[in-house]
Image (spheres, rainbow, N blue to C red):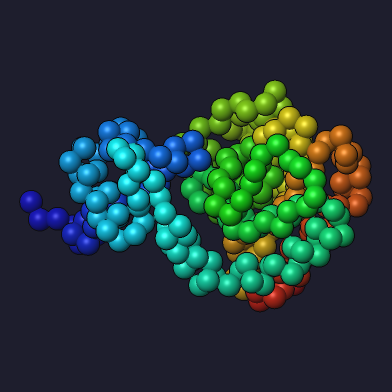
Length: 260
């Protein structure tokens, strides 16, 4: 059988190599060949060849029978950030937001079903979760994720709602696809998202869109605050407007058209 052009151009070995890299996480920082085979669904001999190749290239190091990623992997993410130039533009605005509000400010982009942190300006306040560049959070249960999802075309939102998994994280987590659809359309209409303790008990988060020259939502500026520190009324009246305005200024620097 003659393969279609797109199938002939598909490099399966590259797919397998990336799947091995992505198998490592904060829950699995060190893995054996057997564990990598189980997590990726690849055969042990295939995983062994991939790991040895990655080790030779400097992306993986051996620790006895375990393997772990090396800092060289960060070069892959840095290539994306450097080409986008987004974090360089956003950095001073994020610093100003944290200085004015006293709360950490984050920049994130959508990757599949997750919101991924591109940059973060910390504050002196201690939050339960350690969030750094590369941290992934479920899009459906976070303000940054909902803002990013709301920026997608309708057919992509429907695809996400049809095939996504929405487990309950806290007692407040919205898991019903129909309700999530309503929320995403509301977020799109109002131009910001707010999540009240759906991802973490005692934490409220809110986000605003960062747009490019084509008026596409390419990232989101967000903030998380302790529920006991700021009421919803204070968020709406004091901190959310600061985040929204900073996101608009970043978008303006990226060539986005003026808000309608």
